[in-house]
Length: 379
DNA sequence: AATGCGGGGTC
DNA sequence: GACCCAGCATT
Image (cartoon, rainbow, N blue to C red; front, top):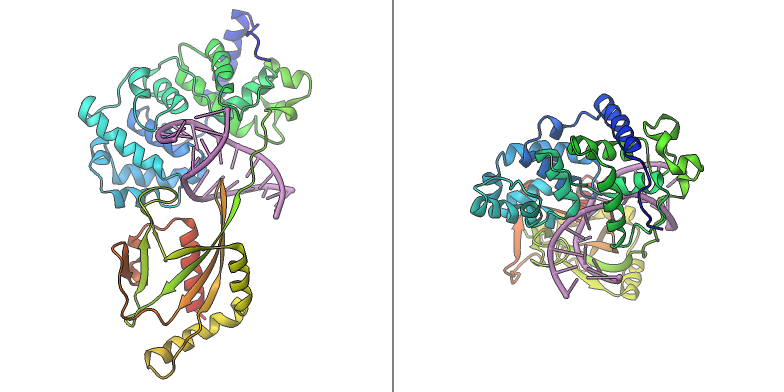
């Protein structure tokens, strides 16, 4: 499996030249490539972890407007920080970034440090991001090995190591380190990323137009589709919830801040409680269809406000499902018209008018719940 | 080494 | 629905 790189020095240099020539000609025009400012490189690389380029672009531009310098980031309010990240996912990324920004202000004169050891010491910066910042911003000859690069190199050298295993990164580190450009490491690394994103794609790679096809072992043996080798991951575990949409007499909704640890920490939600699959199925069956009920909600609310009738039944707004990497949520979204008055409010709860929702950070499942609510109110 | 942590896409 | 993409921190 993990043997030595057998290329001659001439072949290595020729490979680098061909790849770099392609990159200089074909590189994607992206906002964070306007300069090699370490702060911009850092922000873009953190955003690009697990996230596609098209998604990142608007977030990146707004982030640089809101937090133009490392010091602005270090001093930002957590709410604004989360708002800047709302919808991007993996929210610990932005919390870790602020932690690192504070470290830079305190011990690195407010700047990104310039040695790979210091860069890697910062919170949220691991081997990939450290290599990307080091090579792009400071021309350090460090590899930046992400999924794209492992895909390219697994094909280039027909490497069958399982890329899902942590130890495999070492194998690829060795191959990239021995074949990468020492004079243009930043462009070399970015060339590999662009190649992986546009040519050497997971399915149906465009081998005929590839600038390094003549070096590729997988192309030679027509086995590109067999790489990279990767073991399948577990299916997401299903979890079942009821979310309560509760309104008081002034029309404000009850929102709750999630716990400060764990999934979607410190973000806002309608109060939710977990139920068993059996209870979920039983509850879901006890409601009429969404279509039938949603039109009744508005009508019954107006009656309730006039206190003409006593509503005892909860109304189903709909079902929200959301798949995370490790779990799948099934949420019954229920409008509870009775419990909005004389409530004991918890510390983490707040009454919020719908017009004010934009000021609160809602992760995707909660955005879907808000969409259901809006839909029902339009009926 | 295994797990927790979001969100996007295609077929 | 089933499949694909995927770094870092923590334990």
